[in-house]
Image (cartoon, rainbow, N blue to C red; front, side):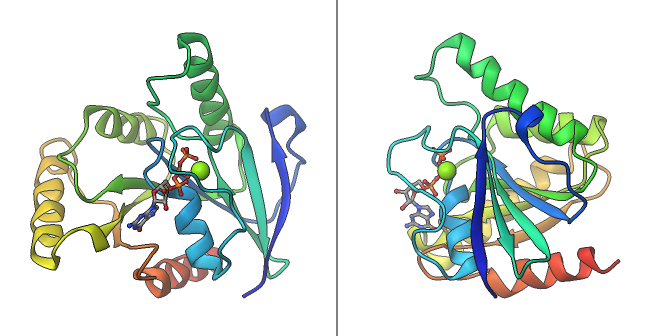
Length: 194
Ligand code: GTP
Ligand code: MG
């Protein structure tokens, strides 16, 4: 697998039209989107990561094997940015997800350590209403004991089943331990070829 940086775009107006499949990564600031992309690509510094939230502020694309794109999206829900730019992030994310016809699936990243957060549940509801295909990837499972991670994920599924008839695809990952990589790449391969 060979991934290369292909550009960073502040709005979808400047995002080149294209018909190669795109798989996007979204979630709260600092949840580990850029780290997960690096882990999937086996390249430590491909996507810029930071311990401070709000690092990725553009749509960033990485071309994989010349055939499809991984797309790093800005985080949502970062309280320290001004109200105005928060809506701006929102608008960038919304424009991309609603208008990008070659976006095959968006991975919603959820920190496996936290109780279900309202903002994530609302975001997924919006995805559902907008008929945007998505999966969930739980992140940072290395920071928990296996049994704790399992329990949190079970709880999360139960929470989702309060509003959803069916659960989305669920992946359990750790960027530091490189877990969940094969599962996600196999899923992307399958969706790309379907
Ligand atoms: P924004 O671009 O700011 O929205 O953040 P992001 O979601 O892209 O998060 P990023 O990948 O930059 O990671 C945020 C912090 O979490 C960094 O300090 C990472 O090293 C750390 N991190 C990410 N994934 C993992 C993981 O699986 N395990 C551990 N232990 N730390 C992680
Ligand atoms: Mg990022």
